[in-house]
Length: 621
Image (tube, rainbow, N blue to C red; front, top):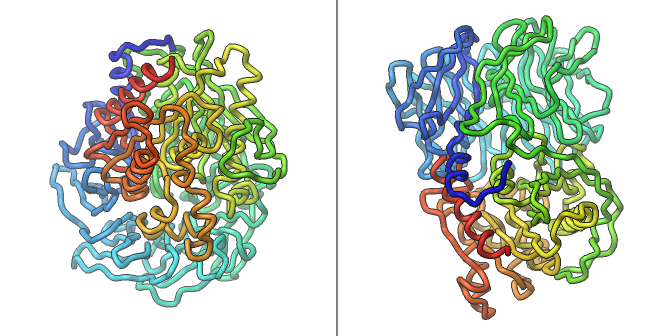
């Protein structure tokens, strides 16, 4: 994209209409989705045959489209409503005639797991009593019954076709890495561990077969994620695939003889259909990029016997909605992407790189010293801004259990529009390459993976002579925000400036104040507890090394963030002040009102774009 500091470009980018969470209706005739074509996120219904789009909501749904929607019966859609992005959701329903009704209001976070075929029963996950556990809610009586009570989070619940059983996953072992699939009666009685895979591996249910006697499951015992079909009568499982790529299950097709999955290859993703009789699988015939199946859950995917809903995107093409026909591997575009004043050719494409890293970059100054790690090949995406010479933004992803892909990234294109080339790094700990690669980060948070980030930055600076090594910025959100803080205190000689957005700074404070399931599934899994590993919590907290900050750093945080509380930014700001740094001169600080852990709202995105562009223009000369 042509570089420009023009505020109009930022507004035009922020205003590009974006869809989210497309979900097929029970009869397959319609798709419910969030869409902000009006300038605000609203619930829309898309007719599969005609392509007609109808807006159902008028300001009743959240501005931020973080949480998915799901159908009840064919005339009602359930959605999650929180308070200004704080993720402490309640469940509401919106009917075809525009009525909004409260369905379930409880303290803490609520997330719909599944809806019965008649639309009258919800299974939800909730932190009402502390940890994330499962509840059954009857719409007719309004009664809510707790059906699991585990110390670690219970999630991934799916109802059998007759509504009499629930499959879900949790962990009762002493191994934090473990996750097992259970089946229980609908009232929570008689839970049975199916004992899939090996101890310490992660297994989860994906969908019930139409006969109610089989489960599509995913498991990573073999390192790379694999899919299987578990027969409840024989208590046996058959695995599919050739263990060449990471795969995760999605849904049974209506005939019960085929299943859908998603396959990850480097930085791309493609759906796969498996024939259960022959065991053969074939990839969907779509252009290289990221193709995903439907929205949340197996019920969001299937249109009819042979047609399924697919979202498709590339680095230069915005997400569009396809209906894919498995009978002849053809597809039709159901909802085209909007480009406003832009064309796909205006956007920067991504080059996939492979970088060898031992987790110890050449940059000399380090807050924490490490012995060399195993050398691993790290994947990365590089976007060339076309500026000569070009400043560079190093943009580590969040998660940390996530990855950057060849999909359209609006923040990347905003940065490119301001003349910055962008580097994204799938450091060790990222997904898409199996269990072992993910667990490289366990017990070593802020270890080798941060070295991978710095090593990848050094690699591109050495490889592309048009990059300006005196204008290198690190920017990230969530765990990427943590990485931005850590890079600034661990490798200050590498960077000219940093932007840490909704990032972690004090790991003990994070442990005490994040939501319960983040405490157990994130903090304890990667770090243990502060009581068990006090030195690790202190050593790997950026605030411990605040005196290493040498260049301007911009701290940005949403005040309603319950994942990474705003206390994280305030602690680092206060530590900077206590160490003699001056706000406005050595660092800048911004709290975002009416916002939690980032936002998809156009006005709130624009605010963040403008803050970023202004800081970069002033601080990176």
